[in-house]
Length: 186
Image (cartoon, rainbow, N blue to C red; front, side, top):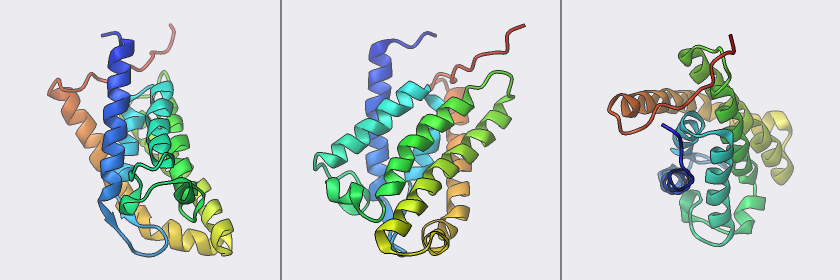
């Protein structure tokens, strides 16, 4: 089924709202809280095209920058984006776009595409977040990784597995159109 512009915009708005809501489920454990955002970013990567993913997470970031409390802990504003955890927020944009791109590579079996997308999502969220956290707090990159990545890896892998299962279940139920993936040209 072709994706219409209206459907694409509605999907982006709904997923941006889910991303905002997922930030409110927040457990502070240090400079970076545990949230459900990774779960939604993986869903975005699996159900959106790279352009749709860019619009979706971009909308979320713009809402937060404009002062709407969509970031973890019901925070908002440019200070959050430039603060210690701002790199993870920017990383969510890179992660969603990169994950969506890899999930649609022709010739990859579905499971391999999903796993590759998760690896890309986590890598593109962690890398800028860790570098930003290091710069903002004066920690070394290794110290920032220990504080901002290590405590989250197991949780994020579990959230990613849950996101894959949710997308598959929604597609089977007919609630979600299966993401279109190009096939390898013969």
